[in-house]
Each structure stands twice: as structure tokens, then as C-alpha cells.
Length: 209
Ligand code: PRP
Ligand code: URA
Image (tube, rainbow, N blue to C red; front, side, top):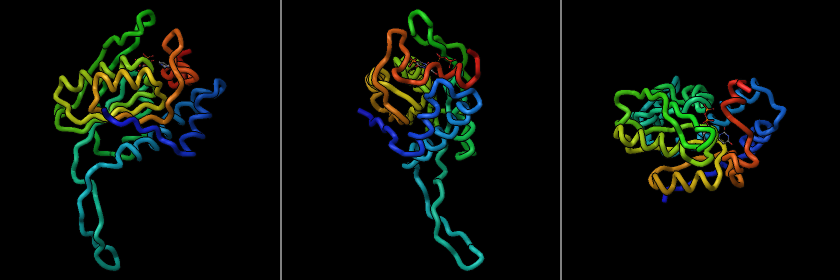
């Protein structure tokens, strides 16, 4: 069973507390999504392979480490996952970006696919799937299913808030996929929203409600 990493860090906890507040406005919410994504990216990329290189400094030659040419891709689940992309690409400028469009049917809560565009060589890349919310896990499982059908072998899931139901769904369907969360909340409510959660992440990022 793949590990669930719940990132226990004062900066993440502080930013998440502001994000959760019902009075936090769109601008601040969007900024916080990006900032937390960057902090999570720092941890989720900890095991990337590096290689030793020699760098001429103004003083002498330094033995340094650089990324060992591993190809990466960031795949946001639309819409809300888009909020996590910019700051992550800022940290990993060579990453390619794919998009998977899914929305939850309001009645069944099942994911409905409406868009997919991935880098041609996605099967050669380590993929970071990003979405602020892991609720029933339906969207995450569908996105990972899709990536595996396209030949992806190394997939990491990054969500800002998860819950036990969503974690269990991903672990059952995809036991090889590591999950990174900024917080593991209590449960889902009767509308399949995360409790205590932060409400509808997409609406709060894009100001649609
Ligand atoms: C939200 C969220 C996830 C999904 C999580 O998206 O961003 O993609 O719900 O729920 P699940 O784990 O039960 O599948 P939503 O469907 O509201 O679409 P949006 O991003 O377009 O608002
Ligand atoms: N999607 C959201 O945006 N929030 C939830 O709590 C659950 C699904």
C-alpha cells in the first residue's frame, strides 16, 4: 500500500487555516492555494534523483548536485487543480503540463470527463496529479486510471485537503500511487463535501459563487 504523507509544517498549517475561513476572499484564497502547492511540491519532490556535477565558482571548483534529467509532468484536474500549477512550474520550470477535465455530477457525485490533453511523451514522465480536494476520491481515481491507460508508470497524487474516504478509494484502486496532503480531515458530509474542509475549491479559486 502506498504511503500517505500528511505534511506537518507550521507554514502550511497557518496558510491552510486562513484558506479554510469562510470570509477569506477569492484573491487571497487563490494566492494561498499557490503558496501551499509550492510548499507541498518541495516535499513531494524530495526523492527525485540527482547527479554530481562540477561547477566553476569565482574561487574554485565546487562539487554540486543537480536533478538527474528526470522528466516530470504536472497534471491538474480541472478546474480547481489549475490553482496549484503556476507556483509548481515556478519551482520545476522544465516540467510539461497536461490537463484532465473532470466535474462531479451533483446527484451521483461520480466524476464526468470533459477534457484531456497530455504531453505526447507522458508515458516517459513522472507525473504529479494536482487537485486541492480529495473527497470521494472518484476524480483522483478516474484521472489516475486515464494516465495509466496512457502508459504512465510513476504517478504522485497531491491534494491540499483529503479525507479518509478519498484516501481509501485511491489506495484501493491505485496502491502504487503515493499521496501528499496538507491536511487529512475528518469525513465527508451527505453531499460528499469534506468536513470541516473549505467548501467548493473551484468556486473559491475562480469566484463563481
Ligand atoms: C472538486 C475538486 C475535485 C473533486 C473532488 O472538483 O476540485 O476535482 O471535486 O471530489 P471527489 O474526490 O469526490 O471526486 P469539482 O467536481 O467540484 O469541479 P471543479 O474543479 O470544476 O469545481
Ligand atoms: N470538492 C470540493 O471542492 N470540496 C469538497 O469538499 C469536496 C469536493
